[in-house]
Figure 1 (tube, helix red, strand yellow):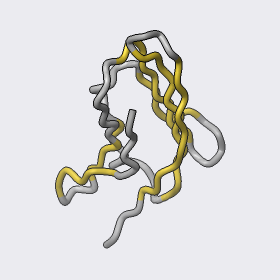
Figure 2 (figure 1 turned 45 degrees about the vertical axis):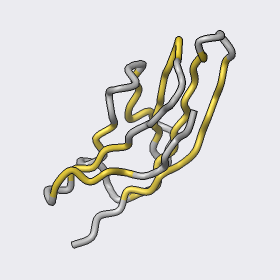
Figure 3 (figure 1 turned 90 degrees about the vertical axis):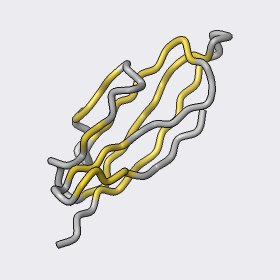
Figure 4 (figure 1 turned 120 degrees about the vertical axis):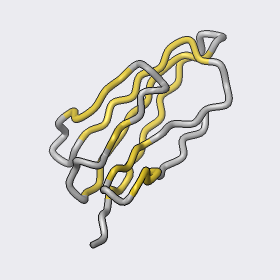
Length: 87
């Protein structure tokens, strides 16, 4: 599973999404996004449900993705991403 650590701008109204892209079959998927204080700000088990960061402050956020491939092999990936708005 490849994770592309970037937000994709939707339009000029400060809407941005964090999107996971994958090229393998998955049995299970869960993503959780945390703020700097460790508070959960987003979680989903739907790989097509993207995080809209447009309402968040410019900051660094942390994510953990857990799941299982079709062969039931478990995986965990983690990382961070920066949300930054320019005026």
